[in-house]
Length: 66
Image (tube, rainbow, N blue to C red; front, side, top):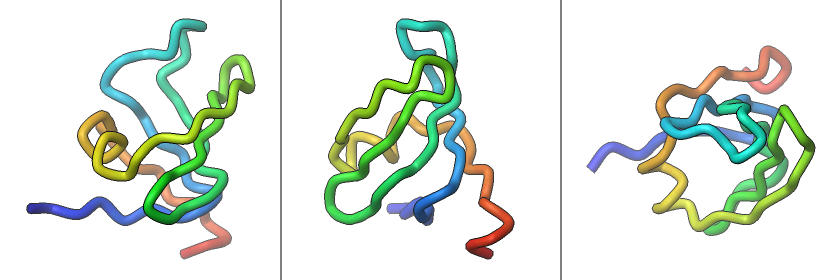
């Protein structure tokens, strides 16, 4: 199984868009549950890591955390 590595500050491009129309999410907090924020409307959601890894298309690393 391939584990996707991401940290706070990274941008995630999702397979399906949020109801507001944006498919870009920002990682706020990591752990067994991940806190993400929609880049379009600002809604914050906590998602289980396993579920989030299945719905991510691409991870854009934050330059400050690399």
